[in-house]
Amino acid sequence: MKTLHIDSVRKSYQNKVILSDIYLACKTGEIVGLLGRNGSGKSTLLKIIFGSERADNKFVRAGDRIIRNITDGRNLVNYLPQDNFLPRGVRIRTLFELFLTSKMNRHILEHEYVQPLLNKKNDELSGGEKRIVEILLLIHSNADFILLDEPFNGLSPKLCDYICEYIKQLAPTKGFIISDHDYTNIINPSDRIVVLKDGYLREIKDKAELVELGYLLESHL
Ligand SMILES: Nc1ncnc2c1ncn2[C@@H]1O[C@H](COP(=O)(O)OP(=O)(O)OP(=O)(O)O)[C@@H](O)[C@H]1O
Image: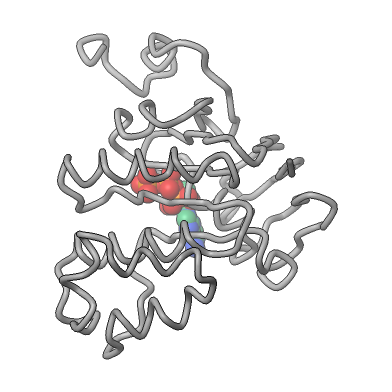
């Protein structure tokens, strides 16, 4: 078992503090749900962990390797950004063949949601179809820790449930940190829930705490 340790993360933009001294740990075999209102800093935190965003201060370690930038985290930490990242003009089959080298992963080419897309190019896919391809590429990558920033955006409820189940199946060998705006998508698969508010990260034990933190209305419970 490996642990992703995130400690002393601080980040400000133009003197506005977004993250103050964040601590978070995620073990392989664990799914951590990251919630927070719009602009609370979820994407900033995930990018800092991955290494694509600079922090004012940070300590990130995956297993025994300290992660200062994306290169340090290669094969250890991977990140699904909010925006589409697939290159244009490349067939989906080619993308899967390029990214998925191990035999174990090749079964996803037979996948019911993937097969109809294999001969299309990225530009010919709908938003939801692009998202499913991106999620499957990311979660099947070699990395021990997968950071998913709003993975369910644009997916129909059935596909969200399917992806949740898929992540749960992979969770014994990987650690996941997942953020999403629909808290039900997060609460379902997560072993632990953390909420970002006013620059601080708090772990919650009960859904009712989401009301106290101003994330949900009482009527949502
Ligand atoms: N490059 C930047 N320059 C200045 N401010 C930024 C920059 N990137 C993000 N911010 C600010 O930092 C704050 C946190 O942004 P971030 O995108 O991390 O929030 P979020 O919780 O992911 O939001 P959402 O849920 O709406 O996607 C916001 O107030 C945003 O305006």
